[in-house]
Amino acid sequence: MNDEDLVFKALADPTRRALLDRLFVRDGQTLTQLESELDMTRFGVMKHLRLLEEAGLVVTRRQGREKLHFLNPVPIRLIHDRWIDKYTEGHTRALLDLKAELERDEPEEKR
Amino acid sequence: MNDEDLVFKALADPTRRALLDRLFVRDGQTLTQLESELDMTRFGVMKHLRLLEEAGLVVTRRQGREKLHFLNPVPIRLIHDRWIDKYTEGHTRALLDLKAELERDEPEEKR
DNA sequence: TTGACATGTGACCATCTGGTCACCTATTCT
DNA sequence: AGAATAGGTGACCAGATGGTCACATGTCAA
Figure (cartoon, rainbow over the protein chains, first blue to last red):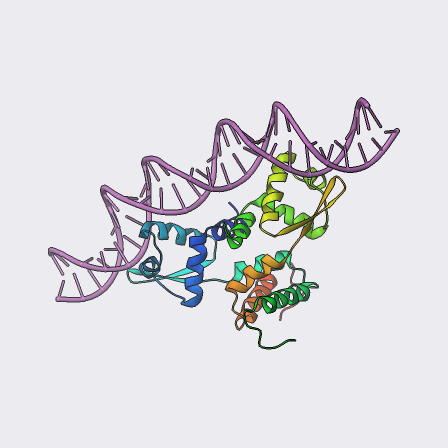
């Protein structure tokens, strides 16, 4: 399987996205730390972390008997660049800003 | 299944990514047009397009007996925003630029 | 050095997914 | 009207995926 495929397959699972979210908040966690936050056995979490690492979305560093996990944002950025045209990127952003504005529960002011 | 899940599941398949690539190059194609570019039966392509549409990655417009398909970049942008920190986005971009530079087959100059 | 702790492997199974087909409806053209 | 064209549905099957467990290796601390 090629790199590109690995990244998208890795992102396809909600548990793996949750793991990325945890690492986005606090980088460098161990398997045991991550397991304690998810309702799943250690083996399940380990499998998911392996896929994330193979996809390059997570990089690791061994420290004694522990293995620290870090989020790598580069593959995510590449996905963005693939389908967001540089010249129309501003439009997409503006659209999202507008959407956020409309969905705000208590608007502070009209703009 | 929630929206988020639909988007990532939709992106997980190489055929569906190829469809998005085709629409990125030329927007507003019909099922038959798209089918002719892929080595798959019409039914397979139709299933994929349905998933892309349910995920909001593709929007459609009927025109007589034809159905035109358009790429919608908004969900892609949201994926980016989820894991790319606004404050470190510059670093990621710089890293990618450096990588592209290093991988250039015939460097024009040293920088 | 012995026991506790952190991580790793291979097998196993229920469920999901990708692709095809027989058959169907709606629209256009002559 | 009748034929050709564009799109749609439900069932089906092989292969991939998610999760668990018994068991194993490497590391730390008393």
